[in-house]
View 1: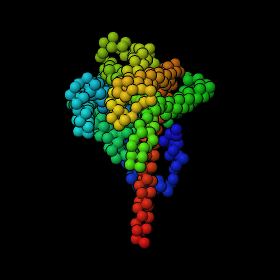
View 2: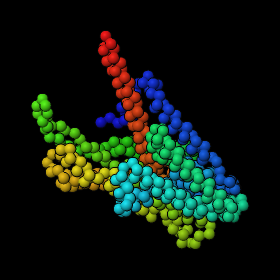
View 3: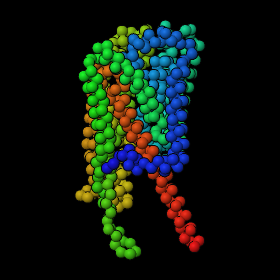
View 4: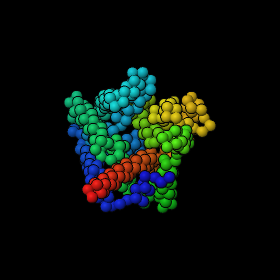
Length: 445
């Protein structure tokens, strides 16, 4: 089965693309919105000493700060107005999804359709504001230890208001990209932050190799081979699916008995996509980032715990694996309900050959999905852990890690798929208009 990218390349018609006015407008809107995001990363917080900030970041860039800076596109290194990035919104989404599975009221809201979804999104935004206030106040307190020009309550208040406003602006920008552009806006903002740092990462890697701190040319070749191999595996697995055969019975029609139809229910090997690594990373980074900013006045046990949870450390890797596996099964259970799917099949007369409709179908789908999710969780752990271990051993930049590559490849595939869908819809509308014109001309004759 060809991917959306292969279909787009095979069926690309530049004439049709040039006529797809709405698609071009969406692409331009997305590009301009991402440019606005990149410009915002260069707007610094008021009252910050840039020299002291650069010294602090250079001492801690190999830890949690470097990981946070990866997802924020360099905003932390420059301590911009969007230094918190989009992570508070993602953390709030995690909390809301966990609560939706436990709270009966939120479950009822989810069943209300679009109105319920808007209400849950509103609660998610409220949670984002609360998380932003807590994180930004902790950051302001940490910046007062030698980085703020004039420490005090006024500096804390302005920092909190600015950082909260910056994150809410990113959330709004991401929603605008989703509604008026191409692709998922939140994912594209993270994608843009990672891609924008790639040239700097490549230059620093080559510089480290030239100085001998990273190794000889063989290490660079091995790193390049690893990146290409990881990308190939991600593309292969993300396209892999288990196609469950669905049989529909014969039906009586006016002109006689029709044949029974067959179709397939595609179950992706990695149903959760890039969500588990992002959620696991954000949960690990949330407490550690707060401890990192307040490390000057923190007790010794906090400093020790922060070091143990540093990227590449055994405790960090253990909790990272646990988080990935948990969110793989949790998110898959959220997006695919075997009982509901089995009921819908039974309602429309469909069944899986050899499996009774109803509970047996639900159990079979749950069994298949559990095995697929287990394999998908192992794949995500391997993709995310192997580069983490190599990066800890050879001081490879964060940008070549498995999580960043997974995000870049998945977001690229999803965006290309949406572009292909818009282009095919435009071509279909053009064919329908031509058919109507031909029909009108025949009737006029």
